[in-house]
Length: 114
Image 1: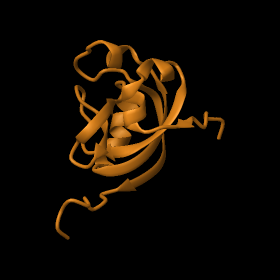
Image 2: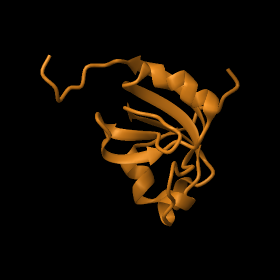
Image 3: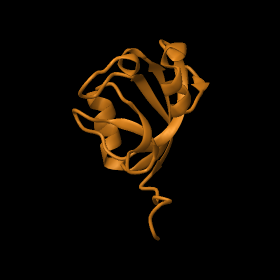
Image 4: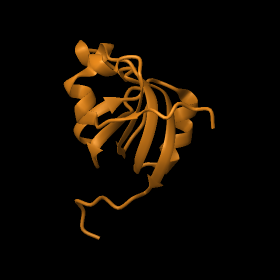
């Protein structure tokens, strides 16, 4: 209800100019296929293909999302560009304080046969 709306952007826009979005609330759409302690990403395409952004670690977020994966989502989050400008390992905190606005879980992968 009182959550920031976020500026709609694509994963590609964020990755091409991460400093532009640093500290800002963004709204981004993508696919989540897995989420673990060391790896939780939002990707352009199913099966973690294409460009991606990493979710900051969050036990409650992980517990909520894991049972629903794979999913196509629209997420609002505060972006930290540090790990997009330089290299970070193990679940880089790029998407922080995430809020899933739209969730289509167990969605058929458009690249797979029905």
